[in-house]
Length: 559
DNA sequence: GGACGGTGAAACTTCAGGTTGCCTC
DNA sequence: GAAGTTTCACCGTCC
Image (cartoon, rainbow, N blue to C red; front, side):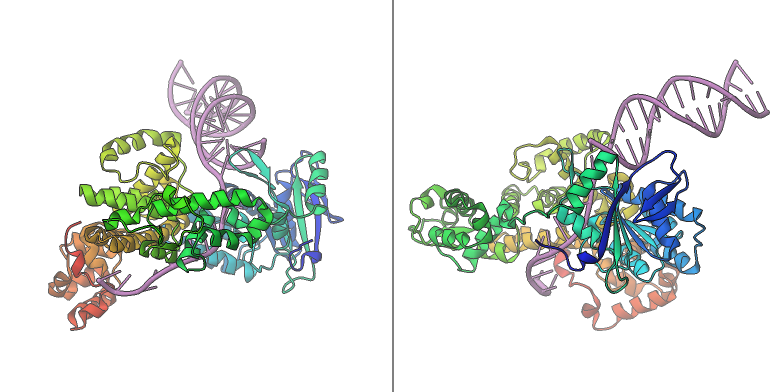
């Protein structure tokens, strides 16, 4: 049986989640007094602080992490935990991690001041590091977290309190796997900090208590399943096997896959053969693979699209990856996303209608951007209106090739709108309030968009679409800085971001030459003296080009 | 009698995370 | 399925 390292140092128990009249709780044979207003998890967390230790509380959703940290803060106040100068300073840094604090920043800063914090992937990287560092240094005493913190983090947590062991899966609430429970329990009593740790589960009823003990404390971890069983992963690996020339025919491929853990586990070779056939068909139909043994067709374009059916006639056909296929594989792009992008780019190339919205929508349709923001009741009117406005110019209407899923297509549209607002220079707080996308999530999606833009420009280059290549390079820069096109030249200068660029632009300083010509006093009044001097120095030297973040000359043309 | 605030029940809404890529045209 | 949030009816208090 597999156990995480150091797991044997963790003492485990189950306690009730709620109660009405009890004022004490027995945990690991010790009595913990509880204020009548506190929930047991918060009381146990506060008790951990009282004995001079630290605790991690695991919950099932981000919202719950935030709420729980407030409950812990309240319990800490009752044990007279004194906020100190370190907490004040940390709280200040967390509040000002973004140029404009969002409500989430304010909420986090408020609990940190009281000795606790929440932690999930919706936080931006800086805030996450500040929380982890604060906990490691013993400044923050309790963290309420989603499973972000469950694996691979060595933190000085004496107790792990698992408030929820069920999670929403799309078809109701399911118990989390035993392996995941073990990962969480294993966060307590790390060898570098304690000689043992305590893992505490919370049960709703007595029956629940017994079933949790049976399932998690006495239960065996689940079998491990091969990730190749997921078709997107298999699709990518099949393409890369041909791209690297590890295999060169269908029978080669079957032989290779037969030796993997996936085939060992799946065991039905005939079924695997059919799946591989389908994938080769898809890759061939999209021009990522070609059959070398087939006679070349007249036009190069036709040659890229040999029918999958033709290919199936013989298992011994020599198959190789096309130039396009090799590039897609090296870019680590899911071939399905590549296919969506290529179809969209071709439509754009033929129709010459591609505007910024269409391009952003096309890229937003790629699988890599999942999970999409959820569509709320109040969103429908605006989404329907936006769809109607842009419908004729959309480059991807097939919604990931999964038919026209109404909600999914609206989610993609919602994400597109959020990116458009970003390009309209809206800040993170606005995006959070308007679209429910946290700064951390948005930053992650921007990075993926950056990569997708790069992939799209590479694809355009290979397919000889010069105009699309230029557009994709430009969109990439617009997204990177979150600016309107008119600010592109200004943000190319080192130390000028979207805010400073807008300030300069609105004061009629709209290009590098405008900066050269404007007086130092005017620049200083807008940017402060030090920044103004350094920027002036940059644009005045003969080495202008080196000081620009990018060479702008090919972006001067209109999109 | 109207404005206001507090309270609690009912209705409604929402729901984890991480990995991959290239390199300046 | 359950936690958290919002809405709304109801009631008491105050001016």
